[in-house]
Image 1 (cartoon, rainbow, N blue to C red):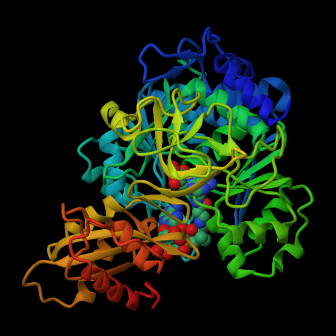
Image 2: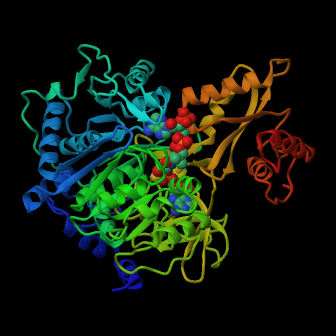
Image 3: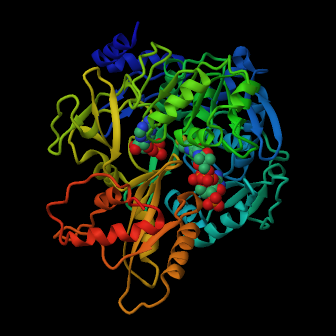
Length: 630
Ligand code: COA
Ligand code: AMP
């Protein structure tokens, strides 16, 4: 069957399609039905099943003869460490950790926050939670204490599992002081923490609250896999929305297992036993789905890579890892390849490595620019597949289903909708537009298994953010079009979310930090185009009347407070002081127009603009920063 047949089969009978895919999962009690529409427009899948994620990702492979197969390869050029963990070792380590967590009171349904760098123990912590039916929430290491505190207050974890430190090129990230600061800031206090002490920096533990990862496992009985209901939350992953408060995306257990397992062959074209590598971070959805769960559920070998595309030690690192570990499918963000291309434009490093075992390169997380795709195709000689998805869905909405049929690549398009997704382009009133026309990208409800059923403790926000704009559809927040061949094109976000180096960030959250500065009267943060990172945040600040402090001093302070409040990952370094912001007559800030000016792109003068003269002032303010055709 080709792609068109598979998609048609899904569309003709979605429930039968997903019940068939569900057979690849080992259930404690198999589902009797696929879709649960009792509470529409909120949907669930496989509600009445009983299952355990860790069993499917780890134990069953040991029982089925894969015990000696490598489950995790840890490759850390930043610490000069390499290590392999077999499935049987992984099972034993995870069962022991889960046993220790249980001995301290963690049970099914309890939340556990995980704040760890790219080390295998991060995956073990996730799997230990899954083993107990505890709901983990992994927080990316590049966030500051305040962001961690916000997540602690929302998820209300019983425990927090962290490492003593993370390693960024040239600096140690002191996780423990960040964690202590976050617990101090948060209203909710966890019962205890577990600290994995790394040799690069050993953290001070607070007696009675902080336990040593190894020490607290002494003498405890390993935990067995606890069955949970199909709709039980496997995890919460916070992602940026329009406002400063992050959205807690809930991942349902059974659908997650079924859908991720399906993608491993059909999209990534790997068979059990093959090595699959996603060069992302466990703090992002790509890390959840394709460093941890997807490959392990499917019986693959996954790679935990602690390094950067360049500088650890050079722009040949990716190719080295692919050759050395015989990677069959490789997944990264376009920004990473842009960094490699910039450093090694002629692909000299590629000549040192044998990539013959590699089938294809997959890109996601941000728009893949044609130059980068072409460079990668040309230099590696491999197919490069862009695919489009979101934290909310957890896996591909549109992609190239290489395991079913490799579709011709159209550069600029992530290819076609995957089974499960009826993708439509809608106009402002919610009507489908003709092919080739731009509109809001929406997915007809219900979304497929594994996608978010709701937001953690925020059902109203879920409805408001995703369901209310277009009744009967899920609003993706992206705009784009579909061509005559059914290929999708993703053009822009329709909200205030920006994408910096493949990291999803909220300009609203940064504006909240800027606005809190005592000298700032008004502000706006927009995402301007950046050659390496895709977008960069840029702040416009209007000072309070009477403030005569030097502008560069104030800018330094706001840059520091974004770094201290949101974290280094925000990459907020550009800001300028202006007298006023361009607005519509009704007072809405014209952020889109400011982006166009910064990028020196054509734009139509907004009909509702209050005073067009302001735009010239904005242009002049941007020039010293190297923008607006400086
Ligand atoms: N913990 C702590 N700090 C982190 C971090 C982490 N896990 N990840 C990034 N940071 C810090 C960086 O050190 C940097 O700090 P600095 O301002 O002191 O230099 C800051 O956050 C910004 O990081 P980033 O935007 O990643 O830029 P960079 O200059 O460090 O690296 C690239 C540029 C392109 C090499 C890098 O962005 C990259 O590898 N991107 C790929 C991203 C990716 O795979 N995303 C997957 C999402 S699916
Ligand atoms: P995240 O939830 O962090 O994965 O970010 C999801 C958002 O990143 C999407 O809504 C898009 O705006 C953007 N995105 C992800 N993949 C792609 C892609 N292949 N092409 C264009 N934009 C993408």
